[in-house]
Every structure is written in C-alpha cells, then in structure tokens.
Length: 64
Ligand code: SF4
Image 1 (tube, protein in one colour):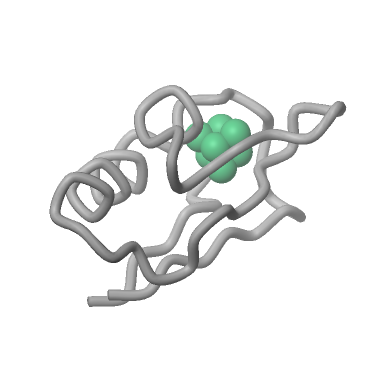
Image 2 (cartoon, rainbow, N blue to C red):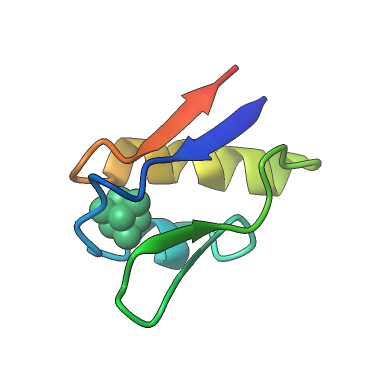
C-alpha cells in the first residue's frame, strides 16, 4: 500500500492528521505533509485509508 498527498489541492482541513497522526502531519500553513509513504502496520494502514475517505479535497490518495 502506498499513500500520496497533493499539497496543491489540500485545503488544510486537518482530517488526515487527526485521523492518522502517524502517517500525516500539517505544516505551519495547515497544508498536509506525508510522514510515511508506505505504512508498515495494520493500524497505520487502516487509519490512512480512513483519512483518504474523510479528506474533503481529494488530496489524499491510497494506492493498494
Ligand atoms: S484532510 Fe485533506 S484537505 Fe485536510 S489537511 Fe489532510 S490532505 Fe489537506
């Protein structure tokens, strides 16, 4: 599984960092930053998937 983020479309809602804080963070401006591109355990993978569902801008992409 691979995670990508698109900082160009991120609106800084923060759902990703709240939902999967081990995978996503936000910079000073609130824009998403990716901490782990290939989450290595079930908890990180499932929360990353959830973040992909919750992100309102489509910035989070999950490639299984
Ligand atoms: S949930 Fe989506 S829009 Fe919000 S900070 Fe994360 S990537 Fe950006």
